[in-house]
Image 1: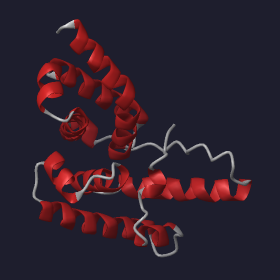
Image 2: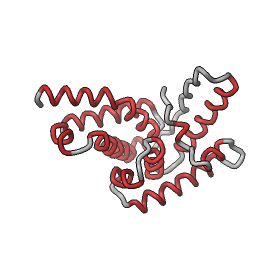
Image 3: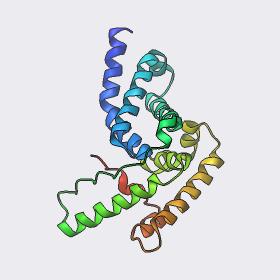
Amino acid sequence: MRKSDEERFREFARAHSAALRRSAYLLCGDWHLADDLVQTTLMKMYGAWKRVSRAHHPVGYARKILLRCWLDERRRPWRRSESRGEFVPERPDPGMGPADAAEQEGLRAELIRALGTLAPRKRAVLVLRFFESLSVGETAEALACSEGTVKSQTARGLADMRAALGTESAAVDYVTAGGATTGLRRYTP
């Protein structure tokens, strides 16, 4: 790889690795696995960088690789028997009062727990549609499926999240209002 291509790849990796890591975490629910997925994604992108940087949209290509790496990881036999650990709560916004910060932290923890109960395809659709703010068409392209599949998986995924949250949860109103993953946008360790 030429030095100029390598430098452009490094700039891309620096600029987008944090966003890819957050997306990976929302997909898998484990920060360590998210780091591994991002590293694998960047390694695969490095090998195809010359072609990707000239012919494709690199961010979309990175998302597609990340999704495929995550799905491959889920298919591994030793992953099927593992249980998911507890989620790390988000640091509260410094401008919030203690009661508001605690409520927001609890709401986010509930939403992430509910997101973790979804089937992989539904979770991927919700992460791409709401967290990444992709359109139905862009999500369909990233997942290599039809727009109708994206729409049905979105509806079913939101319904499953509502069911996982239960009727007593304050997060149900949040999901019903369509803000289920909007509250997760700033979710960082």
